[in-house]
Image 1 (spheres, rainbow, N blue to C red):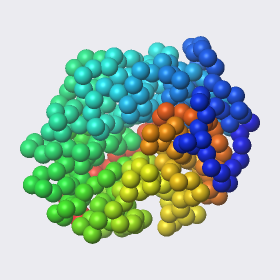
Image 2: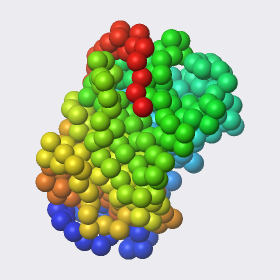
Image 3: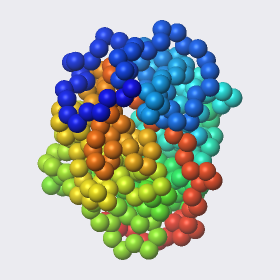
Image 4: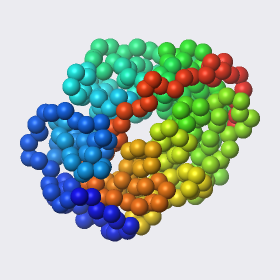
Length: 356
């Protein structure tokens, strides 16, 4: 049973002592290893274990023990998860990597299988690759003498986008998946910063959140081929930041988290129904967009900031929210991406134009 909620006070201070499903049942005490269905797209860490939950049935399956969840992000096939210190936990025959000494601030799973992880390393001075089965790192730094802040793989797996800073200015670039043929796509003015980047609509466009000199944040959309500008699709308030920028599978819709601090953050969706953006959980004091469960529903976490999280499936059009589970530590979406993946236009790495 999954409860349908329009507005209620949950999460944070009201979270139960132990994680609790929407049905009122607590999680099983043990962790029996078994197969997990592809429909179990909502995942979370609670009681020292990772779980996958089917949003339609409310059934939760224990996956593995977790010592330090870290980023807790799933690979593109939904069969391996990245934890703290570049630890990888795999399901079934998927590879496993033990935790190491490196704990990067930014990372992204390689596409379309997840056979590598690109991350910001060497104190921000390089982009490196790690392999889920273990071993050393491969240096794929596209531009020397710069500081790297963010990196994200293109859905094709043939390229990644990244934010670098040189001479006090931040900019967004795209290179091949081995760091070759780097091209600048967005050049920031002095004092401009980029909170988040992601590819959207099958990798044909790039979304980015830019903080400008007036201390406001804008979310821009840039067509990777043939664009002459990067229009603003959403404008935030003074001193706000944008995180968790995630695109909907198979479409142009977008979800993200905005706010001045953890205590004031709120989840937003941009879609044909809400072209100027709408809060996904407008009656909650704190909410965060975790990811897209499917084409129409966003996994939203409420609470946090030192408190436990409650997880909801929110309809991106109607904004109806369904409680899934209460009192968890961290959450992510576990969903297999499109396969075979969308192509990468040859013009992307050959483009010479850039936009402010």
